[in-house]
Length: 336
Image 1 (cartoon, rainbow, N blue to C red):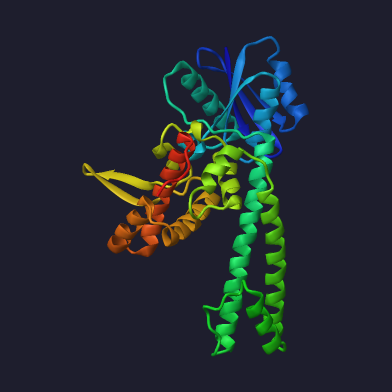
Image 2 (cartoon, rainbow, N blue to C red):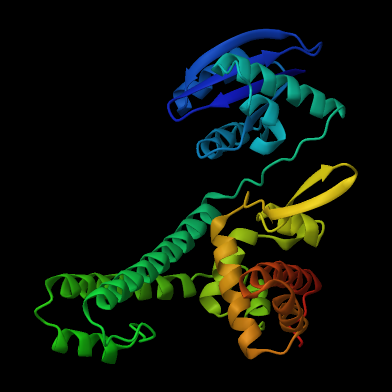
């Protein structure tokens, strides 16, 4: 058996082949395209081997190439290889060798490593669409803040609580302050983002993905069709998470823990997971606690009195995630 560690970059990949005794056999530098990766297959012709690479933007296509050729392939979470990523003497060949050695040890059962889930091309396309919709939502919110800031600086009578999402308010601003060039440009940009965002919303809602799970999510107050599809684009399969702790940790919804003097200190969220999930969960939780009397709402209100609204919303979001995983795994709709 040979163990191949891959240090993957956009244009080039370094492969280090480790023998069964743990010693490096050879190192290869190839292009990160099919022709380049084929050279590794040709070199290993007739030999039993497996490959491992660190999770990155470029690891997906490398993983799919080797999987397509029936090669056992693994993508390891970067944080599992912290000793590699934080090494003072970093070179592509040293990194590839270290990854190969870790692969061998992991396969022998000597160490534990956390492997990344590799989505299919269809799952990637859905997630990219959902991410684009979330991006437009952020841009629209940013533009709204810019308009309100501009109005507050220049027009004393402007009410910052005015809802720019309504046509009435935007038409009023256009008719009243038509000579304010900056304001008109901002309103035009707001309208453009709003139109594009609505088109993306409709496109996301039309996606057919895990309909049973989507229906379960829509049973939760605060979760609509668009949000349910966005959530499933990231969760994909709830059964790949053994428990709620792993589920929350995967999306960076757990606090940092520091052990000092025999005492555990809990800090801010790790935020190691998908930012889109954290953003959506805070939005869902905020809506849920306003309109539904549930265990999450009661938990939020108790924490709000203890730590304030902002921190309470973060902790309640994690409780909401726990409830979401339970509903998906149980297969029964939400009950207050």
